[in-house]
Image (cartoon, rainbow, N blue to C red; front, side, top):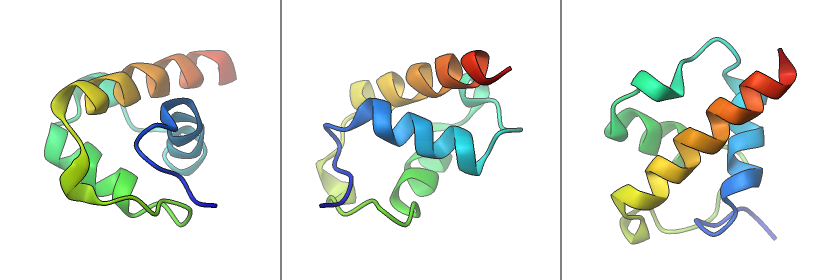
Length: 69
């Protein structure tokens, strides 16, 4: 089973692994959406996401990067 919009923490982990040098806090939402939907394991509909979910993903990604540092 692939990742869906409900898998915020797992998406954040995958983004941190794939893009460790990116700063999610300053990333435009369209760019974040593109990176998420391009993850190999992502299988949800890009049209089903809202801005709040993307904000949660960006925050979780920032936290994941902080844990890896």
